Image (cartoon, rainbow, N blue to C red; front, side, top):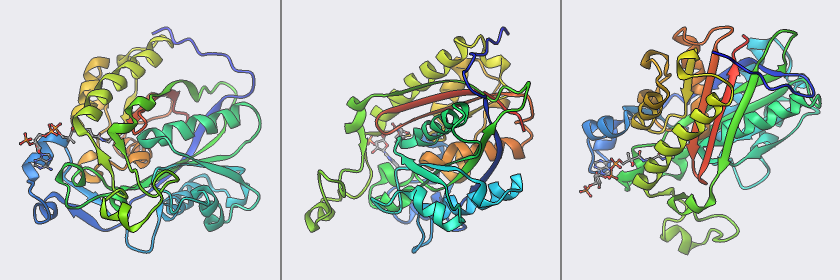
Length: 338
Ligand SMILES: CC(C)(COP(=O)(O)OP(=O)(O)OC[C@H]1O[C@@H](n2cnc3c(N)ncnc32)[C@H](O)[C@@H]1OP(=O)(O)O)[C@@H](O)C(=O)NCCC(=O)NCCS
């Protein structure tokens, strides 16, 4: 390996703590068999999902972020008032506005922080992460909280078997801080959007184009609409392309990685990408079986799985990758410094 680390003007950025949260209620494939014409076998074979978590009524994505943020602050041993900026990658905000970042800021008591939401579909977390990294690298901030969370079950039509088996609720966050002398932290990213794919995955109701009315609700425009096979084809092609590009231009191959942490949309998309990278399957982080597709929440949740399984250790090169609504594509390379 000839890792060539891109020089930066300011300080390098690294992850110094993380936290996750999934709501306790579980919806299994067996439960779904009673709701729509599907089977545990079909869902497992086509997606790798066995169960997913469902957020209780009365709670929103800000509550997922808040619980995760509390764990993250406790891990780092700092007060919420030390956080300077909060970024939230989500497509299921509590409401159109204010931004979920504002709600999280208030709930954790991060007095004095600023922040914003990032709408990047399932790439929302990696997009928000990159924005946070730039805030640290530029020298603008020393403590940035980046959350990725979604409550997709709120936007799911439980009479549509083609979408209702896929999604779950949950998420997490990381704390970004300047790296110490000799540390590398974030190395590079390849992010991309392709709006021509917007027709293949969207939630058309409730925005300025189609504000909520009885008619939009009758037409089920407040639910996720997806052309699954079109999304699948794009995801397999672009996840492989973006990950290969970010590795290649930094002199790294799949074999040099400590682990690969992909967005958890479909087990077949993950394994196709890992195969193209020539990765040892034991270093590919997979937890889709118990969480389903949590959109912006999946990479922080998978990061925790990687740590729990002993697959993410100090000094490891780590590749993150996601593809989602937009279409959106994100791949990031970093060295884990915790
Ligand atoms: C949704 C997805 C799992 C469907 O798998 P697929 O292999 O493409 O299946 P198809 O959509 O071609 O459907 C095959 C058959 O299964 C049926 N089917 C669809 N959902 C089903 C379900 N839950 N249970 C049983 N059968 C189902 C279809 O009706 C179709 O039947 P037909 O052949 O009689 O018409 C897959 O396309 C996918 O994962 N796409 C990407 C989704 C995604 O990641 N979205 C989030 C973006 S990050």
